[in-house]
Length: 164
Image: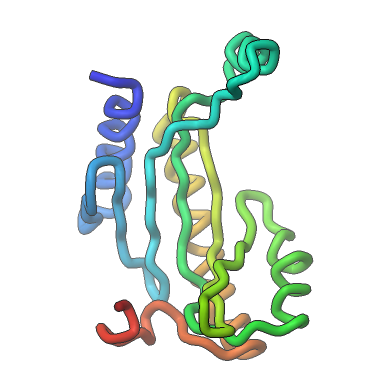
C-alpha cells in the first residue's frame, strides 16, 4: 500500500467519526455538507523539488510528501471587483488556520474558497478534526458576510444547473 493510500484510509476513518454522512468522491477525495457550505478533502502528493540540493534538504527536514487539502465554498458566481480582491487579501487571511482563495471564472465572476492544508504523514485525529472544523465553521461564517458585501451564491443557494 502506498503512503498516499495509507493517508487516504486514515482520513476516511477520521472524517467518518466527525461526519458519518461524508461521501468518498474518488480515490483520496471526500466531500460533506456543513450548514450553508460544502467541504472537500483531497489527498495529494506534495511537491518534492527536482534540484538535488533542494530535494535533499526537503527529505532531511521531513517536509511533507503527502498533503491533506481541505477547503470549503464561501461563494460561487461572485462578480470580480477591487473590493473583493482586497477583502480576500486582508480580512480573508486573518484566520489562525487557513485563508481565503479566489478561483477566477471565465465569465468575469469568481468562486471564493476557504482553504487549509495539513501534512498527511503525521496527521492525527485531533489535528484533522481541528483543521476540518476550522475550515467548515469559518466558511459557514464568511459566506453570509461575503454574500452581503459582494453578491454571488452560497453553496446552499446553488441549484443543480448552477453546478454544471
